Image (cartoon, rainbow, N blue to C red; front, side, top):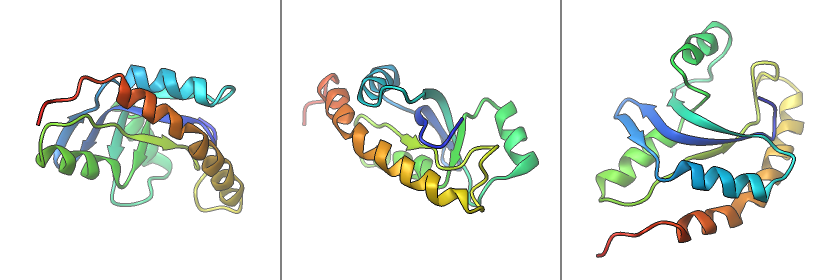
Length: 136
């Protein structure tokens, strides 16, 4: 992965358990169209309470995790505790194994990630429109 790549979770893994995401393939397709030339990765997103580096990254990769963050699993788990609803987790990569978070290049990666994140917002609208929403 490289800074600016997009990660679409098909599930999040955290202390609250595994939370499946709603229609990740539809969202990934819409995101790929929104940011041509950027790679969109789909797979499990694992939670951590700290920045993951070195050997720990390798250990999480063995579990199938394609990315790690500190917020997504808790957010989706909490959303589903409040009732049935579509949930998704999308991240734009700032740091990757070859581009560790704690280095000067993080600023450039962060700017790139922000631009990509801003460009993908219309894809969420398409994803949401594609879902059969529960009656209230």
